[in-house]
Length: 500
Ligand code: ZN
Image (cartoon, rainbow, N blue to C red; front, side, top):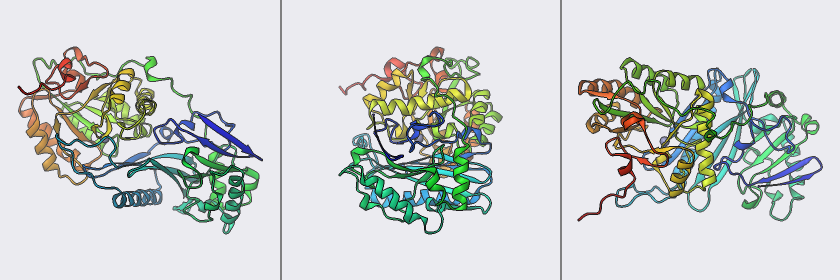
């Protein structure tokens, strides 16, 4: 649903997005090369950049925090700046968010605990300049709040700059005045008086394909919430006189973004076969003592090391991946497929899905299915909800998308502050026939624990398979919740027997 109002070549766009809070992702890179709306941005397809990887920061176990940012090749100054930005966001969230008590079986978490979610897009990538747009979503009670921030990186000097660095000395005042004038035409619920010529107000500036300067505002920064995204485009010719050297390079880079691939048709159109381990059928878990290792939140910087360890030990695993990481590293996904492990769906941006509408849940899950299918030619049939947080809506959407819901029955409680010794001890101590062991391939200590887990459990007679192989005929039912391979699918979703 969109409401587009234009005035003298400058548009204020109010869009109510259906993209899981990540306002603009739907706008690209699938837009036509010259979109009608001048505030629409084009984005660079990260899979086209060799050497790009992602970093993930999570909170402590009782926090719903998931931060992802890109690491671009040969741009250490950019990595430092992005890390500093997201660390500041995390610190602010820590101060603002009430800390929930750890969930217990008697008192599970409420459906809407505080949450911090950061993801990213590339708004420019050239030999001269890189633009990274961070979208930060925050829930600390009340309503979800999205904010945007675009960092620019000048490769010649190795320096990262905030968005106002796109402008010449003193030009921010002129841009602010221009933006104010445009906003003033847009009715009583837009407040141009809030526009100040400072870095905080103008922290997200980019260019569209035409080279217009696009200024974006955060939720409720300059307009009532119901107006949704508010952005102003300053036409190319006018903006040209205001740009710094970096700004001119950034504009040229944005104008040269190649048109994106056509939007993938929905995964459930069965264009791609269902994902299956390339080694499925080689182990009979009715006979062998099978166990399934599962890794969430990747692929990340340790995934490749993990794969080498698994392969060395003849082990396979199931990877529940975050879509925004998937698109950055398609070659790594193909390696996972080729080495017999299985790729599964862990949502697009790791939002807590439980409070979201079915449209947003569907978007989070199907976009990741599509991204995996594009990379490896197979559509995932398993999903795990971020934070293990389910709602009837999530279950229903999973069923519609052909996804079985996989939980875990051995919790290694791995995390940023855990040791390899503890993670290994919990995995080994919890292992039993048919177990689904939960871990994360974004923590170094987790990877350090893997050789010990594999060696010890192999000595105990275990065989490491992908999750579907735990079940007869590899059969899992879409929309069913599987906690382990110890129960039949029919039992897995039954309510627990009441006590006598
Ligand atoms: Zn996760």
